[in-house]
Amino acid sequence: MKKIFAVILSISLIMGLAACAGKVEVPSKKDVQKEVEKEYDMDFDLDSKDIAEDGSEAEWVFISEDGSLQVTVSWSAKDPDEFDFDEEELAVLPDGNSGAIPDPIDAKGSAMVGVSMPTKDLQRWNQDGDRIKNDLEAAGYEVDLQYAANDVYTQVSQIENMVNSGCDLIIVAAIDSASVSEALDLAAQAGIPVIAYDRLVYGTDNVDYYVTFDQYQVGQLQAQYIVNYLGLDYNSGPFNIEITTGDPDDNNAMFFYSGAMDVLNPYIESGKLVVVSGQTDFTDVATVSWKTENAESRAESIISACYSDGTNIDAWLCSNDSTALGVANALASYYTGSYPVITGQDCDIANVKMILDGTQSMSVFKDTIVLADQTAYMASQILSGQTPDINDTVTYNNGNKVVPAYLCEAIVVDANNYSDILIDSGYYTEDQLS
Ligand code: BGC
Image (cartoon, rainbow, N blue to C red; front, side, top):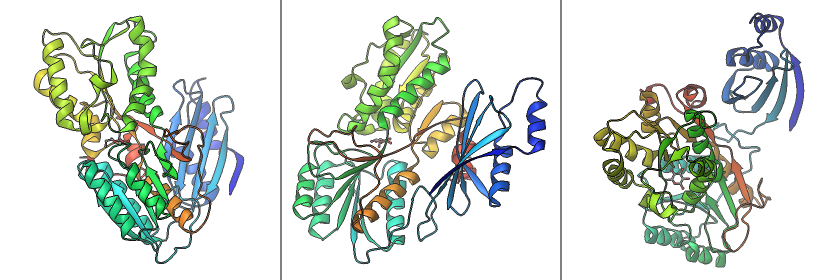
């Protein structure tokens, strides 16, 4: 249930805002939280915040500590003594996990869910798999969680085993966007519904739903960070940039690349950004298997061919954290110029530490808890015979059909907001990042 209403700020906060010599200041997170906690007489944690660069508008999302309520607070400098509250009830999974799970669904007892993840090599897939498993087990389902060591054949045979062993639903994050389709045909013949997780499966009718983040937007956020960081709209440049994206077999890599290039191309065309290596085509900038070593060796070649004469690199667009790590390693070993702005994605612990020590500038945070919770919830809706929640019915055409999708929201994290987004939310502890 949603409820929207406005709250006039307490006198002390209004006085605080007015006291700022003519300029209306954006209220602090602490003050807003105090207002929310006063209004509901409950403790809340900040989930995310979004403040316009010119300070004219702001929005904070708070989740109550018991996970039952989400309150979005909007504020505008035009009406500084008023907060608009938008309240939404959340449901709590039986294990007490909070998150974006709207309503609990009764467990179906004996149902078994197969979860096929690509690899244990990256931190994120371990978190995704564990969270989905815990969510579903807490709701009473059995779970067969398998990792395929980034090997397509292993993944195909694991999915076939899930079908043969009687799974009632399969969740798959495909290693290769097309190669699992035959295994999914087998699932369809056995009447088993399939949810594509984070990565869409292409060339098949037999994928029922897709739960993901807006991957094109992830690329846009990375490129826009570079645009803002270098001040491309007001500095004359030119600035030097290199590009590293992901695995050509993972269709997400193309979304990240296109989102980023759509933002960067106008600056490249006008000469404000120069790709000194000349490598801009997807095939040239791709990183097989998203491997750190592959990104590192390509970056080493570029640095020695184009930057060993003292030419500066101003920006290095990296599509995710494992590739950003490879580029940072190569820079540490072979580059002596001023340090570039480097992008990433996933907020892996190693990379958040790099953000804190200045060797990576940002990472796009795709909260695996939100994604996993939403997927577990969708699975439980399907298994209980309900129509699952979706919020996109047009974007994800897999070549055979448009796959109904649920998109979650990605957030830019850098040294300025990591604490709000990653620590205050409980995603990481300070200790994990030190
Ligand atoms: C995911 C990214 C991840 C990459 C490498 C992509 O499909 O969307 O979050 O960094 O795979 O595993």
